[in-house]
Image 1 (tube, rainbow, N blue to C red):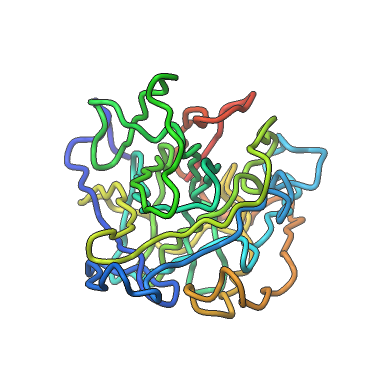
Image 2 (cartoon, rainbow, N blue to C red; image 1 turned 60 degrees about the vertical axis):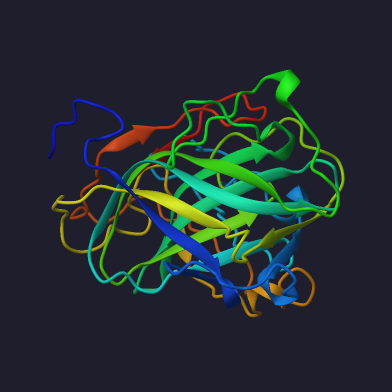
Length: 305
């Protein structure tokens, strides 16, 4: 255990991962030119592509509800995966997904989701974040790990046509231990499908095509809150085993990131988990409660890890 007397935690550092070719996360900044068409990934933003929530309905607030946490849908999302981590890595705090975004619409709703892909083939939800692109203007208290939009009506602005804009999306506060051998996964999609019992009342109409750049001057990336020097238990939590964090079998995308907007083949059918309790040897780590998303919702998002 570790006593924490301030937040963000003292000693937290921003570990940055850049979006790379073929759906990778890399710690090397991109070098592609702006006119390199292969350095742009596109997807169709479609909230109907997945279920609105991650449970089957009923028992949503049970310790281990009957999850139906569906896979990201090819062509309706972008996914990026890191190499296997060489050491245990504990993350506590907010993260920031720093997109260079272009859309076929003047505005678009965004969801970013952080997961852990384990060596045993399981994928665990860590946390998500949401943003409506038109309210992207940040306030003066924003940091590398926590973009804070002003949320002022006067600051709202449409996305410029045919031009990449900086849109930073907060991954809401979380605490999670990534063990050595696991991989970090980031998913960009329309909102929905990753929360237990709430969904957005109103999203923007239509299914625009959103494009994300990963060039030298538009290096889309994610910054994550690493806290060094913490000792974590050996072994992996059961699946399910962390309250509020569903898990599923990991299914790798079947097409490169640059093709997933139009030509990707769908992954295996969405997985579901009906387990009701983990083995008694699994210990649940400390919990943390996140703030509500920046678009409309009626209940706070919870993340435990």
